[in-house]
Amino acid sequence: MSKGYEYLEHTADVYIKAVGKSLKEAFENAGKATTAVMTDIEKVEPIKSITVEIEAENLEELLYQWLEEIIFRFDADGLLISKFEVREIAEDGSILKGIIKGEEFDPEKHTQQLGVKAVTYHMMEINRNEKVILKFVLDV
Image (cartoon, rainbow, N blue to C red; front, side, top):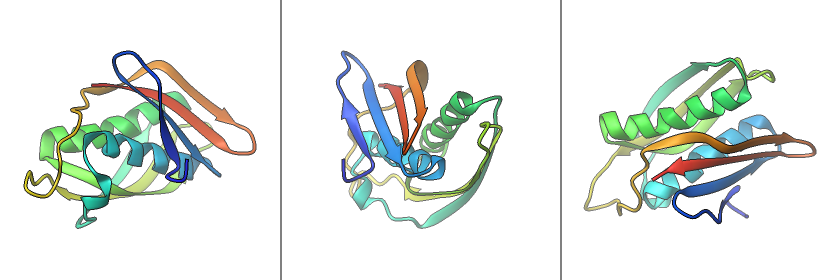
């Protein structure tokens, strides 16, 4: 798992495990994994920068909202995100502040892999021990 994430077995959707030394790093890796489902993330240049601020009731909702932001940017603006910088994240999951960077989808440059409809709470797990492990399902 050198990328900070891996795909787990699931019958119909995409089940992802993202890992980090901190909550910030785990959330960044979850973002990378989400974009990597849609396209080859290595070909997405961090040209456009967007400031993100998310408020939530808990960590699960914060993870959900974070991943939905990535999916929304693609659905609404045709923007693929490749760089994720979580600058602040509350331990209780009440807030996340960060910057996401990417570029507009170009079919000549970006291979279209799976279309992600949404993130789900189904099978979502957040484990914090010596490292942070996030597990979540993307509805494709």
